[in-house]
Length: 282
Image 1 (cartoon, rainbow, N blue to C red):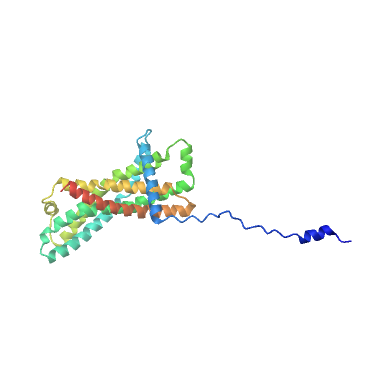
Image 2: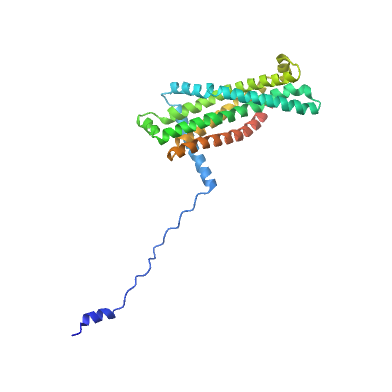
């Protein structure tokens, strides 16, 4: 006997499901370099506002501030003085060679003094401090971030912006002019020594010839512009350190980016500040 149900089922058409018409979302495009740069600047502005608001709100962390003044100031003094001395020696030798060729050797003290005080001393100090202090702050705060020490500080009802960032930024701002004075002094002393070894010249004559035709206002603006350098170095180093991710590799990246970015922005800020000084103090 034939099973008609089986034969009927065999003759039924097979239904093939249609392909899904649900649209598949396309992959998101990668962020461009300009977009990342603008986002970084926006995050930096928010970070600076949080630090500024925490810095003017009591309680104030004076003990941590004094510790950072010692760490940034006295610990950087030998390196800054050595860099200033080397700069003075090089400027003295190069300026003597160049001015002698053009018959203007009498202008050598003035050339050395103006070169060191107006530009070389401040920018050398800013770059040296950005290399030493920027890397130190970036690595220290990055290690605290990846080991969750900053989260523990915040859980203890202590504002990390006030304790960690504001004290370091303020210490950089206060110590950069003093370190610049040390670099200028070392550069002038070694510039005079180099000049005196080639041709007898007393230090009194060197200073009188160097500062002839200039006054105290020529000395103050280049020195105090380094406060802006200190703000840049401290702000970028703290920002890069406190936003670190990725464990030990992130600590290395934070230290490197702190040095590179702070040095770059110090040079760019110097270009703007030199123009402002020329306009405001003609």
